[in-house]
Amino acid sequence: MTEKYITEYVNMGTGETLIACGIFRHELESVLPVENGIAVHWLDAALHADADRMKAALEHAIAAHKANPTDRIRFLFGNGCHPDICRVAEDCGSRLHPVKNCIQAIIGPQKTRQLEADRAMVVTPGWISAWPDIMKGLGWDEVDVRINIGRYDRILLIDAGVATVSDEAILSFYDLVQVPIEIETVDLAYFKNLVNQILNEPTRGVHDG
Image (cartoon, rainbow, N blue to C red; front, side, top):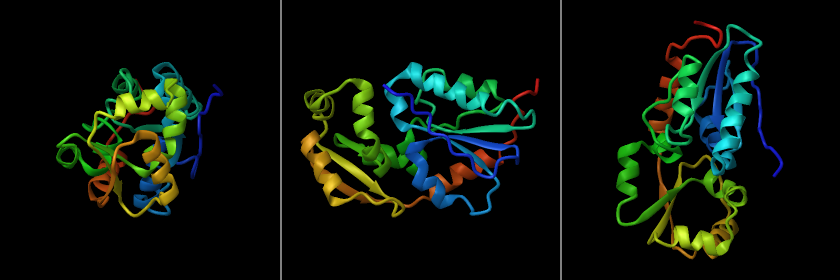
């Protein structure tokens, strides 16, 4: 599989770098001020399917900023996205906030638990878009998908109004998983507060002791 280290730098030279999962692209662009001064380094969401490739991508992203000794690196990932991700963040003088995955990061752990009750699987528009590449990374076919997702009674697609998923894409996903899909309207208040905490938290530079 071709390596996909999606990299996008915005306002480089400020010394503020956010390494973020591409699953958050629309949500993050919605809550960040236009003149934010943050360099965003996006990583492909499909890297979650391969722990070794994901760790390599994280290390690649960190190395890209070591040329500037004043860089302050922060992370927008769930603390359950990789077994070593908390240690990787700590090694950069940063830390992961207490959210396990992208759903908890967007709507909070409590709201996530509420929505996941009664055998519901919660997904985002970005998650549905990334799903074909995640399947490839996992080596899954349609049978594997239905075995692993078929245990759910319904799928809740959370809609914060910042990313569009076409009716065709939703129908295609339903045809694949064969589980009823419902749309749940949410806001980004929790996510905006989380991002503000991440960006305003003191960190060490990548070369600090």
